[in-house]
Length: 607
Figure 1 (cartoon, rainbow, N blue to C red):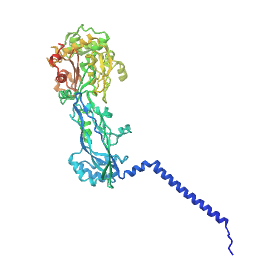
Figure 2 (figure 1 turned 60 degrees about the vertical axis):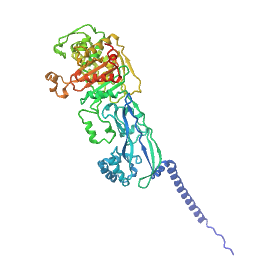
Figure 3 (figure 1 turned 90 degrees about the vertical axis):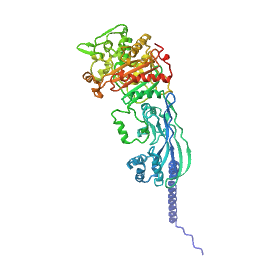
Figure 4 (figure 1 turned 180 degrees about the vertical axis):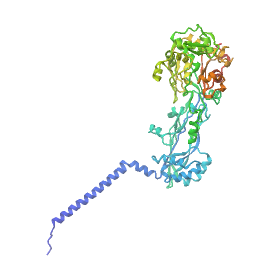
């Protein structure tokens, strides 16, 4: 007899409940697993793929050669040469202290310096970093021999910036240096990485986008020690675009020779276009040291140099203009309608304003002088008279129209604006009125007025070309930029030119020693006082401390009738402008004609 099937409903329900729990638990685990896989493969897939690939693959960027920089005639001023850089890949360095200690004697530099470079790459471990630039071949050999003991270290051949003429024209060229943290943030997304070189000043900075090029890359397979096994992929870099300047290298050499070891600046311009042929500032600096591994000591020596070699005096140096400013006062008087060029002023050697006596540079005076004679002889009393009649605001109006007391607009960084003072400026700056005597001294380029050599070149170009004010430019690809036309009447231009020609060619001219039978040239001397007390008490310049000596100015142009070139020279604490700055200007103008190949007949056709 078969036993009866007896079921326990309570037992069955318990089994079913446990089964549901088990199925739910399995489903939850499966869901978690699927969700985890989703995040790993879909959401963070690229991240984990990169981690996987980088266990065996390394990508080394190949720097692009920077574009060359040429002068107006095709002379190469900046180029590239191959150099050896020591690179590290932070991801492959498990013991940075050990690597730094091993590299230090090989590279002849402190281990702390190498450690500092490695630590820069902590945030981007797969980006190679430079720890030593442009190392000599003997150090290359040492590192290569130890390479197996230096995981994560490599030597790359990269294009190093080379400036073919050292510190000549260094302020125009500028320099490149390692990109800063701030610059990296500013240029995020533009392909820059820590350790990259970037334009820091001059043309290297303003033309960075053209000069830099596009990086290439080299993809390696590496072994467990980080050593390279084979090249998987290589893409060549795209070189940067070349840049051509308006600068004439040969004239730049002449200007530098003239300045010698003196602090100063020379600017030469084509008055009809604004093209800058010369911009030389001394002392200069070697831009090449910034592209290499500039040490803290080297940087300190440069920035603490009392002669300030990094300062472009042609654009940053602001000085009282001295008697060069008399040209501006003459034009202001013409435009105000108060100047009769044929009327004479008697110069007894001094000018009285109430109880105050203002001296002429010539103690015995010039006697009766008209406008042309006053410019030729640089008679202070004549211009004291004009300044008192004009007032500072009328003078400043014309000065500003010519481009003085404001940035010229040249495409180079860190230009100083100078200062063209007015009554309102003094009231705002000092809370004081403009005194009558200040009109007088302003007319001879003393007082508050401050100008830069590039501003003087711009202003004097406008005067001698008939009133067309051009923005100075150093890039040959840019077009002439005419800012404004003052429309100076021809007779006024001729009178000013005659006076300026007399400065050099008249027997009583203040720069008659510059006369050259082969060159038609006009110009104006300028001696800007620095410390009046020393000048009066110690007439022998050799007895005056250097920092209290007058600044020497000279501006010249040629030929007189149809000017092709304007040259301005400023020598800090140089003394008399005609004797010190004048020969520099004359030599640059002579060089211009020699290079142009003009015969004497063409040069002096106006005489």
